[in-house]
Length: 608
Ligand code: G6P
Image (cartoon, rainbow, N blue to C red):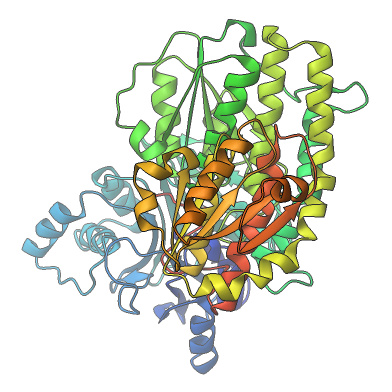
């Protein structure tokens, strides 16, 4: 989840490394550091906190050198202090690392016994000492790295810089992504193509187990068995411009506002709008008609997208759907049916647990389809079918536009499968497709409700706990709404199926408890109204998100109503996500929180 970058440059590289790190900050931002060779000698600057602290440090104490590595951290082992910040170094080398070295304790014991002294609480430091030890034993940098890599267990990516070696960087990939970029007399290495986009669009991704030796004019790739291998170069689609916030205060605000456009773009990719039908932009390597079941696995917001889609696959395509968070699924040893389809959902395409779930399903003989936003990601490369979301880069840590794009893709798949299986006919397909086509406009309408969500910020910011309720597809959306609020405002929030209210959470309700009810006008609306009466009778403060007319007809005593446009209910979560996101956003902004980079979180979670 950390970001790593390395540059073999033709001039001073410190500023370029910082530029690349800015584009990697989504991966972690609790401390940062860089190391270069100044007059051939390793020199480091590191700082606790966000990258701007490192920039201040570099302004005070500039760092020269035409080769260097940099890192932005999301702490796994050891507090996010300057001392634990990467690069970690010895007299021989500096190393930056993303991921976890699972056997670091035993390696540390061994190295302590051999006389090495450890100065940090990180797992990374063992890598620095291990390679240093090999070099002290007489090996050169390449041989030392080659000898040490097989001793490291876990999922990680590494980049090494060596004292006195002005024309050398070494990178290694085992489970966490790493890309090499080719420049004009320069060479780059980084966690993703986005980081390298200001410098080059010519990229090679390391395969799992690969390590690479870089000089300014060569990249020599080795596989896990140490054979020299060729790896294809490709053109990266990553934008060279530093993605900016436009007129918005935060990336999250910008991304919420972009949703009508990106959902429209995504839907256009999957629909034949003139014919009113789903037209998948890829061939399926299986017959939808022959599918026995679907299993969905994902993490965080992507998991909630899957949970909503379960209702659609069951209702429209009449397919049984199993769904689980990937961290559970991967270890559950779930039996999987023959002719089953595994769908993994992931914005980044790098989430470690989701990737492990994918691999398990493949081993179990499942067809694997991924819904991903990053097409060059590991999950995309390992899946049989890639269903892209066209959300564009999502920078805010709290997922917004990726979520509604995931839902859009999953909705198209559910309708496409339903049609192929004969569980809906052409006219029902056309009706559902026209509902989908209306979504961007409805989302734009929903965004116009922003002032109403902003007005709630002060009230909600005083709450200690907030309950979100919904039924049907609004239940997973309630879970997502609660997740959004807790991620960025740090207010405790829980989502519940409205029907479960009386089985526990009703005990929490008093005059201080805001209860946000998501209730589009659907077949279970009346039942949700009954649940709201139960809340109201106990003094709970209801914030109702519902179609205006229905809300008033329901005669609900609400503290506030976010009146939504009229719409057919099938795909309501894609529209109702907007006020849920805006409520969380404005509450967090009102509380002065860092909405784009909330504490302790990271955008891409490549560790367990
Ligand atoms: C992290 C992010 C979430 C995201 C989850 C899954 O927790 O903060 O926003 O939903 O990972 O990420 P993925 O990239 O697999 O969708």
